[in-house]
Structures are given as C-alpha cells and as structure tokens.
Amino acid sequence: MIPGVSRVVNMRKGLQTARHRLAPLVGEALTQVDAEAALADIIELAALDRYQASVGINRAALHVADRARSVGLHDVSLTTFEADGQAHWWDFAAPVAWTPTVARLQTASCGFELDHAVSPFLLATHSASTARGGRTLRLVTESTLRTDDALHDALVLVPSRDWRRTAPVELESLGAAGFATDGNSRQGATGRIELAPESSLFGFSVSPQTMSTLLSLHDVGGSVHVDVQVDRRSRMPIVTAMLPAKVSGAPEVWLIAHLCHPRPSANDNASGVAALIGTADILARQRREMRELALRFVWAPEFCGTAAALHGTVSPGVAFAVNLDMVGQDQATRDSPLCVEVNPAGTSEPLAALADAALAEVFEQTSDAPGRWTRRAPTGTSDHALFATLCPAIALCHGSDPHNHSSADTAEKLSLVELRRAMAATVAISRALAEPAIGAIPRARDARPVSPDELRVPNVRGALAALAGNVRCEVERLAFDEQRYALLFNLLVRSLLGQNSELAATEASRELELKQGDPAVATLVESLRSVGHFGDAR
Image (tube, rainbow, N blue to C red; front, top):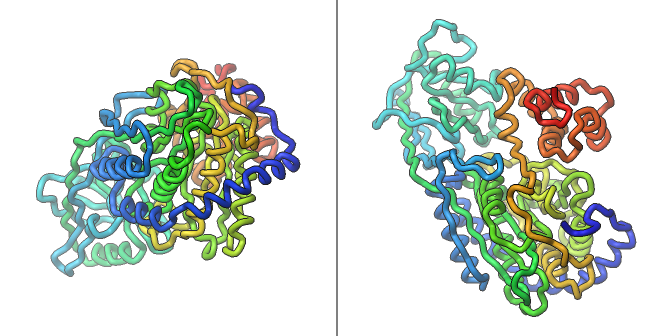
C-alpha cells in the first residue's frame, strides 16, 4: 500500500497548488479531445444490448478492442470467461449467459404488438424462454388473483400502483407463466427489470399507456400470444490494454469503465466507455519516458468483470484507480453536476484532492457552457468501490439522471461539452499520476503486488442473496425506499465502517447523517450479523 494514503491533504492550499500545475495539462487536453468521435462510439455501442454475457456485449468488446488498437494502446487483449454462474472472483460470481433473440407480445384481435427488437428494455433481463413458436395466454390482474387460481397459462398484469420488487418471486411461486408491469416506467419510458438467472418467468416492462391498453384488453376477455427465445451460449468479455512506463515492472494506474447494460444506456455507460477510449487516444501521444507509472485500461462488465480482471491480473501493484461511469449528462437541461465520488474513510486521498483540482480547472476553462462539479459521498454502486481496501480510487460520474436504466437513456440527450470535460479531466489526472515530475501529487513508488487472497473485495449482491428470505425482503424494502439505507448496506458489507457491529452502526449514523437510534440502521446491521459478517457476530 502507498504510505499516507489515508492522510487528508490541506484542501485549500493543496487544491490551489494542484490547479496551478494541472492548468496547462487541462488546457492542452481540451484542445485535443475529440468529443464527436466519442459520440460516434457511444452511438455504436448504444445500438447493442450489452447484457453481461451476451452476443451484444461481445460485439461491444470487439469494437472497443479495435478502437484501443487504433489509438495506439499496447498489449490490447480481449479475454472471455465462461458465463455459467459458477466461476467466482472473491465472492463475485460469473454472470449467466443470456441473449434474447425473440421477444414479442401480440394479439390478433386488435393488431397490438410489442417487440423487444423495436422497444428497448421491454423484456425483463433473465426472462425464461417459451416453447418455440410461443404460446397463447389469458390475461389476469394481480389484484384479482386467488390462491387457487391456476396461472400456468396466464400473463399477470401488475399496474404500477401494485408493483413491488418482490412481485416476480411471488408470481413465480404461484406458477404464473409471466407478467407485464409499468412499475419501473420513468417519465413514460420503459424501465429495467431484472429477474433471477434461474427464473422460470418471463416479464415485460411496459409504459403506462401500454399497461392501459393491456388492462382494457383484459376487461373484454382478450388473450395475448407471447414468444420469447433466448440464446445462452455467450461468454463474458473483458478488454484490457496498456501504456507502459519507462521502466518495466512499474506500479499501475487503472482506468476503468463498465461495458454493460441493455441498449441504449448511452449515458450509463456507453459514455464512460467512449470517454475512456478518447482519453487513451490523447495519453498514447505522450512520451513513454515521462511515465513512472504504467496506465492499464479496463473495459469490463460492472463489478463481476472488473473483479475478474483485478483477480487475474499479473501486475506489479495497483497504485491508483479512476472509474468513468455516466459522464455525458447535459447540464444545460438538468442540474446534475459532474461528481468526484470517493470511497469511505478517506481511502480515496490524495487522489480525490487531485481530481477536485482537475475538475475545478476544467470547469474554469469551459465556463462559457453551463455546468458545475462537486465532491460526492460514497455510494458503493460502481467499480471504484472494489479498490477501497487496495489503493486510492475515485469515480467521475453524474449522480442523478432521470433517464437512467430506461429506454430514454439515448445518445441525443448527451452533451459534447460534458464529454470534453470528462476526458480532459481524466487525461490531466492520469498524467499527474503517471508523471510525478508534474508535481501535482505525492509519488507512488511503494505500491506493491497484492495477491488475491490478501484483498477483501466483498460483493453486495452476494451478501444480500445470503440473507434469509424475509430478512432479504426487508433489507430490499429499506434500500428501495431510502438511498442512504442502500448506501449504508454497501458500506457495512464492505466492512469499511469496522468489524464491530455497534461501532459500525455508530460510524454509519455519523458519516451518512442518520439519526442516532434509527431502527433501520439496527435492522441492516442485524441482518449482516445474522450471517456472521461482523467479528462480534453471534
């Protein structure tokens, strides 16, 4: 580990000094970044359904690998992993291969048809296949279900007023063939629904207008024909590339962007993938003899792919990590600042202070366009969280996007200005880290190799799955109702608030500004104690 990484720098003096030394780097990068090329990459990626182990994400990986070679990166590698849910990297499981090839819901009576090929996010992730050619189903509403109702031939309609996260599990236990809901709709767009990989259900995420049509069809005794076909042969891809240091065996700066999510997912996270390619294009022009740290670029499925890359890498030590996730949002249409998201307990310093300085300078030099930046408290919801116990790590991101995880996350909503800002900031941060002669951050010669067994990289989803059913449902309810409770669970799982449950609860209340004695804190702590997570577990 790097000595002094937990020491918080004098922010005001440090920010001004770092800004002074970063200013020429930022100015140079702003003249070099090609936001139009980044947007072209985003459009290419947004046309693909990038489920974590699918035909689409493998095509995306091929595109990224080709672009990495074209901009001059070294040692470009596209590695694939078996996607059967069995392989593990720490407690992150491999995804399960899933590519929908057909997903249609139609009725002959009124010419009504829904088609996943036309409507993104229509089919719930991990939906099960029907028999080839599909099947005809009657329509029932969840509010009128009886416990003795045979549902094997029924599509259950769940309007938004009745939707809850546990509905798919409940419907599967009742033997339903599938369901349709507008419960995850966002501003009229269809929203993401994810089923368990082993689910026997298929699900459709629809708009409120479509739900109204289906309810009307139900009222007149109508039926629908559903055809869902799934290919389960794909593997999970990871693309890596390097810009070597002047001396072989140097510590590394990891620059990462997650490659996954259903189409279009332009901001989340085609923007980060494209911005990292654009960043690499500029960094590849810098002289190798200036770099004392190597730069490793990683494009992988979120969490599980990054964990696989980190677990399997043969490297001399990770000194810093910078994650790009949702970096293209247009601040002219929504007040959502570009954020430096940190990890808890000061573990992101001194990198976070450097990122603050870079963004302050970027926004100063692009002040003719609207927008602002801010430091963001940890959420644990993106890949930089995996590095919290290893090295200083941050994310550049937008924290609030009304179109996130919906069919409305399209390329035309993105901002070329914001893409320029994100790329220029990442270039400046990367050069300051890799080229200590710039003098914007302490040297990082003491990074050392860390074996997989030494690291603690826990999986929040895995921890949730380990809880008893009723406990898991209560934790999911709390996390869904209040973002701070979701963050608390993330922090507790990662043991970044301590191994003693009472001290962790106290620290959580302080760091997240939760009231002392909040019963939800006790519920979340006790849920993890019940599976032996803390050192004082019963």
